[in-house]
Image (cartoon, rainbow, N blue to C red):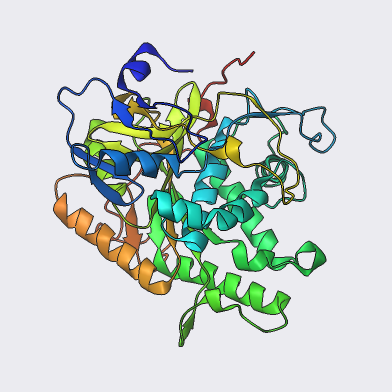
Length: 401
């Protein structure tokens, strides 16, 4: 459901996005005063020269929407997440994109998509609407109940979602998969950087705990994907950074650095939205945020995957756009660092971004150690506009028939 402004600025894919072989083109309306630079999850495109490539990048993204008819969640009668599950679906999209990138590499071209559909289906099975799926709506909702004391069916904020995704990761990495399957090798280590501060030592500790958990579950044998270097074992890392970029509205001073973030190669998007809906932000064009919308349509559930399970309903129809000025200030950035070298590269790019915007408050700060609030100005160059632990109240539920 889009406002008239959203409709005017929307990215639209003509034809049926479920058929990647169709000759589709990405159209954009209201071209006046829009920059030519388009950033989508770490990739830089020219809108004038990379029209088709932008279209394929948009349609390669995993798309999760409300579902109906899934098994009830715990002791509730809920069999549909319409009206409350939009942020949970956005979290599924961010994690799915991270896993697809880690396991399948670049899926932004037609040839790559066709060659790696087996990987895509394998990843999407982790998000089936059944309790046994690691990242199912059931496990995320119940994680909110355990971790944040949120009743099933209550809306999540970006920070709450990040904490729950971390808990799911910890549990999955520490538990042998049913039937001896390789769950540990496909679940990402997940670290949540609180108070807009990325503490390097804490991140490395989270990775080491994941390596140790996988080693223990597998009988002391660490899978090859966990080793980034001979001297330093590594487990693929999803780094989540909850932010609040203003009080009631997103402050304009954050527009430029936020745009820059979507150009960082490790970026896997952000969960956020506007005051009446959650979106999965995947890029930007100037001060326009590009996103996938989880609200419509309400689709039939997809249960446990079988060989003949169709994944057409997960195909992205294209991107919509929202001015940054209209976005809710609460969001959570995500970055995938599959290796230690990738993490170090991420840190270098963040440092350069800070140097490129010397007069602008950074979105978040990187420190080596957790100094417990005793650091000086150099360590803590930025504090949030709000110290709230979670930002659920900043969003409102929408009524979906």
